[in-house]
Image 1 (tube, rainbow, N blue to C red):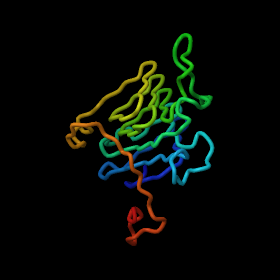
Image 2: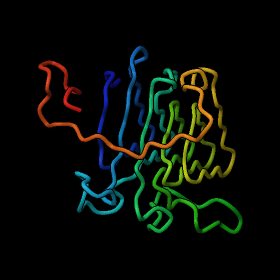
Image 3: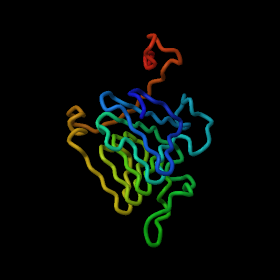
Length: 187
């Protein structure tokens, strides 16, 4: 269980049957930055840096409050142009070869409860994945028995808007908090 807060990664990966739960009373944010973004702290890191991947039978915030967990993925210039991970088999007969090349992959019975904001990249769910929450992405692919549920809690958590959602800006936090005891201060 991770305490409430803001987390910054150059890559996020959960493998075989991993379980992660977040605070059920306060907001939780995960930023997955990209070596493709000018000024990124991830510059120079090799592919698959900049990705958010869940491999097999993962539980991301299962039973948690999906409206309190947001994942922001900047996206990479390798989206739809990288080698597929060995654990991700393209769906179809014959297999559709352009699958499993996305910056955001949830595969093989992985469960996700939260919100993903990835307006410049592809979010892909494969093989019996279950997604509870919301997705904002350039492209969304659901392959082989995927279940998606937009919940009332997520719908009610967003302010009303007449246009689409786009998070174009990233905030860099100071390595030293501006307020003692508050690691997120200085952002």
